[in-house]
Image (tube, rainbow, N blue to C red; front, side, top):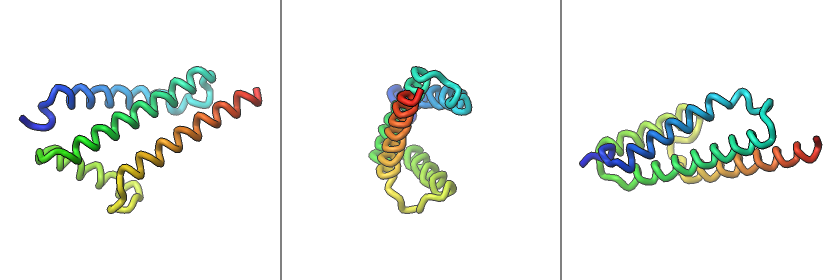
Length: 114
């Protein structure tokens, strides 16, 4: 069975895609959102990041040629965005998680100002 034939993988990829759509739809409205909506948005970002990290780990552990090709495409995309081609994606995921934590802190700081 191919990596992408797995019901779990297909389900996760569908959920990732839906979450990405929701995030992209709201990204330019973020600063106009209520505090609650901002928190929901940031929570969704964290959930998406976690799912992407799990999928990337699954890709890394798979011997399936299609999974290896997808992992390679992810690495190439990261390089096109300016990251070193030898960068450890787990470091990227960790840095992104820290950025999400900073976003949460900013929401809290801005809430104190209001």
